[in-house]
Amino acid sequence: MFYREIIQTETKRGISCRDITDIAVKIVKNSGISEGLCNVFVTGTTAGLQINENDRFLAEDTKRFFKSLIDEDKPYGHPENAVSHMRASLLDADITVPVASNKIVLGRWQSILLWEFAKEKRTRQLVITVLGE
Image 1 (cartoon, helix red, strand yellow):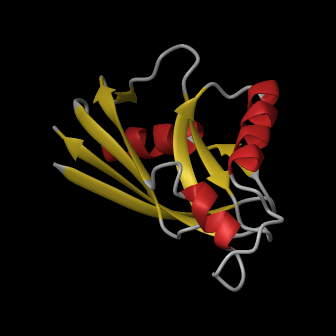
Image 2 (cartoon, one colour):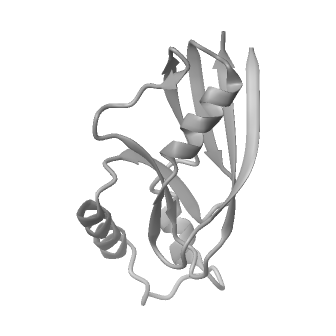
């Protein structure tokens, strides 16, 4: 069986993190699929996905990490937002997690996080696909 929902979600401007686990949990429940896989895909090239702990201190540490790796003040060839693209390339555009008993399987401290790197807030499209039986 195959089930897909495409949803829109808002992000904040600059480097920001949003926990989207609840969105994926709801879609898996809607799917009626008991056993299988859930894939979350973000369209666009200046955002990325990560599985990590949803902790505000860790999020701030991660922001500092991204800033330290890719300096905003250096000249880049891309005319507008090279920094946003390069930071997003450090993460994945999709994440796949197991589904068991019609629920996403994540560890105690794991969350599905959407990272935004664009300078302005965006409406992001998430394609969430559930495969299984």
